[in-house]
Image (cartoon, rainbow, N blue to C red):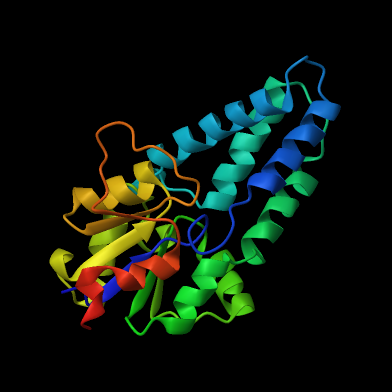
Length: 227
């Protein structure tokens, strides 16, 4: 029986910074000396960021704000753009601190009675501010800063099990990313729930235990009904 919910935040509870990032990419393009499109700029930036994130572990760990700055700086250099790095970053950081919540997520928090532990790659201070702005009730917030590692590495999941006092069989991890949330939970034997609001197809070898289109559906999963 499930006794605690581990919950991703950005992209799962609140909207990702996708629109903000595209606005940033358009600004980079406007001041770029190359013919690259905003989409191509965004793809390069995301690869730079993800490569840094996966490599950031233990002694090489850097906070996500630092990874964002470094990857954006590389992107500006790559596309020979004079866009203001500090202004671009500030718009993204502002989104992290003041995101909008999904309607189904608000419904979930209004009805849920099971302990919730937030597991997020985003820096601790930013996500705490976002949770306070939205006035969400959670039992604990665990971020990459606590474990010097990012999902899908297992450190954050192991730490969450330790602080919650639960075994892998007693929790489920809910998130919108197959590669980060589902793969990470599967790695440590935690029940995985994929939030798939846009009806994407499951590809590759990563298979979630459950698929839902919104967070409110979690409360109808049989393992939770009798709690």
